[in-house]
Amino acid sequence: MPRGQKSKLRAREKRHQARCENQDLGATQATVAERESPSSAYLLFGDRPQNLPAAETPSIPEALQGAPSTTDATAPVSCTSSNEGASSQDEKSLGSSREAEGRKEDPLSKKVVSLVHFLLQKYEKKEPITKGDMIKFVIRKDKCHFNEILKRASEYIELAFGVDLKEVDPIRHYYAFFSKLDLTYDETTSDEEKIPKTGLLMIALGVIFMNGNRAPEEAVWEIMNMMGVYADRKHFLYGDPRKVMTKDLVQLKYLEYQQVPNSDPPRYEFLWGPRAHAETSKMKVLEFVAKMHDTVPSAFPSCYEEALRDEEQRTQARAAARAHTAAMANARSRTTSSSFSHAK
Image 1 (cartoon, rainbow, N blue to C red):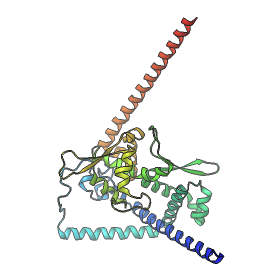
Image 2 (spheres, rainbow, N blue to C red; image 1 turned 180 degrees about the horizontal axis):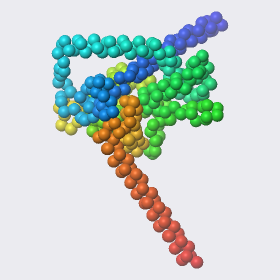
Image 3 (cartoon, rainbow, N blue to C red; image 1 turned 90 degrees about the horizontal axis):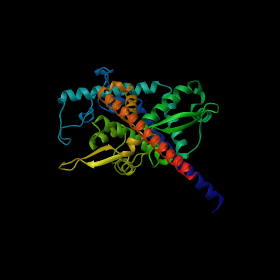
Image 4 (cartoon, helix red, strand yellow; image 1 turned 45 degrees about the horizontal axis):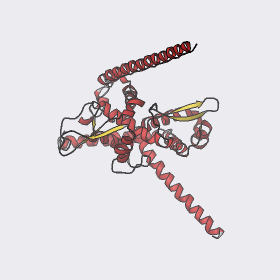
């Protein structure tokens, strides 16, 4: 191929790559903007925290109130008159406009969005994450606000993807992602799977727990929709969300997806799988939910009490396992000593 044609081909490939990256950045910007909205976190789960006044919490669909819905999910429900609905719509539009203006006035928001995108690219390419690179390629002249920008970007990534960004080398300022799952199960997921699937998984586990440990499929997707994740739309990070939720995470034994008994027409529900029970706990999931509400786990009294009972049971189970292991070791030691004595 002539040199001129090769140059044109390379230039075309670079333009295509730039367009793809800009599309991903646009999707990230839209998602981060939604996540930074003051009221968005309260929409993700029902069971309004007790330390928040009712006026600060928007109305929550019945399916997300912390208990399974007893109404027909397909039946039409009218909550307001047409005038009330119009008034409510106007208030929502006004609120959205004010939030949008607030984000525009915040000079650091664009930097937060750019840093989230930068960190996700680093993760996908499996490249090291350093403070120097973050300042050089993203923060630049705003390096005096580095800690604030990094804090907000880290919080977004934690809530959206279920992972923590931690400094692993305080001298050279290297950072790394850590899954919120303990990965104590027999199998382990690959690094490629952890971030996107852990994010969806932590949210699903929270919905299940706060719906009485079994959540109607409709409730789970209602939450996902609020985060811009739809069952029938390809997501720029998660791929096919329905496949991830109903097949991938089920095959990995993180979730159980089953038909509701005696449902006609058939309806489906999600439950925790054995791997979820092994690698995380109700308290960890509740802490994740509480952080999304910018509060503490005890703000959800019934769930908190259940999580405490679960922690106590886990502690007792671990103690029993250690005692059993110690007893087996002592028995083997006595058997070995007895055999040695007889041999003499």
